Image 1 (cartoon, rainbow, N blue to C red):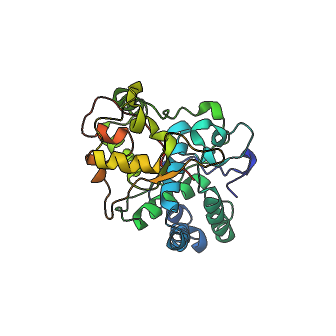
Image 2 (image 1 turned 135 degrees about the horizontal axis):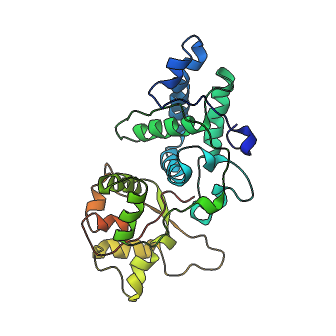
Amino acid sequence: MCLVHVHGAITLPSTALTRNYYKKHYNNTDQCRDVEEYIKHQVKTFWEKDPSITPKLLRLLYSDCFVTGCDASILLIGPNSERTAPQNIGLGGFAFIDKVKEVVESRCRGVVSCADILNLATRDAVHLAGAPSYPVLTGRRDGMTSLKETVDLPSPSISWESALSYFRSKGLDVLDMTTLLGTHSMGFTRCRYILDRLYSYNGTNKPDPNMDHKFLLEMRDRCPPKTTKGQKDPLVPLNPCPNSTHSTTHTTMGHLGTEPCWVWTNSCFWARTHEP
């Protein structure tokens, strides 16, 4: 299982990441060499019942890789683990990854890392959602520690310059940032992450002037300035337009502050993809 304390992690031999790692290194073990197909089948079976697994896995993988690397440390359970950090509130997909791990373990025990499972499953889920598939290098080792104080993901309010600086600190450029922000064209976000754009942008007591007026009214209808006692913070779909990916984010109809940044407005803020 992946959802365990650090003693449950798998440490693979120290080798360079490569495509088809398990097929190359376990060629004489039929069940181990085909693990990528097992994972793909599990993702497809689950995705046909619940396509929301795609944004859940995207956010889960992002939250894992941007902290201590793609080592599945986000999956580890503990009172001070990464998943308990405020930035990781609402993460989903844990039970699904654990289910895939069980299937893989039943065929190839003690070989496949949770880190590889998370990366492969996310790639397959993204492809099922309509995006191009992409090669995933495998052979990762699972992290042995998971601490919430290591989580340095951007806050829900961040400037364009700060966002770019953050991505550059991770060895990424503006193209990488734009591609990753494209995940905001699927899934959901909570109203609390966009309220300032709707009612008091940058503390002005006015909405973000870059938002389309009809879209602003629609979002205000979905997201009142305050919720009533006991009312759950409403969810807002990030892709209300059929067959759109980056198209809506290139207009004044993007939900999140970073989206108008793609057309070079002055300031922006971050938000999370898929809040349950």
